[in-house]
Length: 295
DNA sequence: CGTCTTTGACCGGCGC
DNA sequence: GCGCCGGTCAAAGACG
Image (cartoon, rainbow, N blue to C red; front, side, top):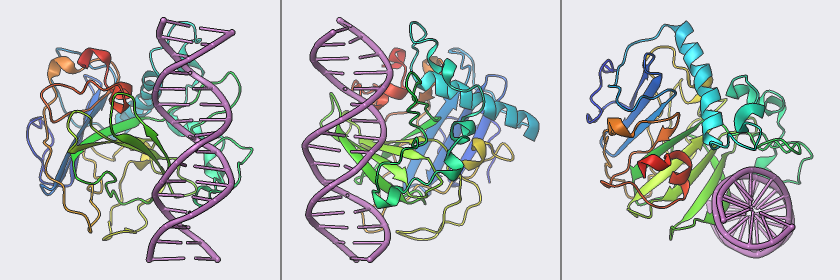
């Protein structure tokens, strides 16, 4: 793999992916590229300083673990919305443990006959904590922007669509997918950008607790590392099975590995690079992950 | 027959 | 309290 020491944010990576952490700035960046067919850029962080230059260095496993844990907490809280007032601190009731603990109570044994559209289990479907007065727990989210004619990008996992909703201020509906693995609680939302209909915004929520069991609708991805493992790569490098498109569909074109404006980094949020100079104004999916200040 | 999609209904959070 | 909206459920149908 190539060096990710000081990746130029504008550089297009030719490998499948690269993953870096900025321990000093509490920032992590993730770059993906699929041989020029489908470039993706993802950035997420913890205490991003608006004017802070990007810094990268390797982490030792211990530190990486800590960072990863911290990331989970902050992401959960942040993505649940600011909600400091009134709602008792919003993420406060999110257990202070790491996001894996979100599912610790039930995810491992989660029967979740998701594939069968089965009856409504009395149990809580993972990310949806239904205890009255308790907020829904959100998993860390990762958003990608890809330029593709197809909405549902292959990523090595099998997904079951469980909903579709029209998005306000967007002519395109948003689709909701759930990993078909009964033990996996990862969800995915796919939405076409209203600003640029040629781009698809994919948001992953949670981490897979399993490996890609082959490639059901295409080739086979033989990768050991995915978003699982607490999104905690063994080293500063992180491999992700390159995004794929359904082979029967026309290939997507490169969006870009667009650099994120330094000034745009703020808060503990996931930033979504967009192909257009200006950020989408729709309040849809982007509204969840792009801080208002960026819009 | 098993898996997946579609789609209307339902629920909860949040702003007013 | 009310209405809007996002997210999820689940029955029914499609498909291989």
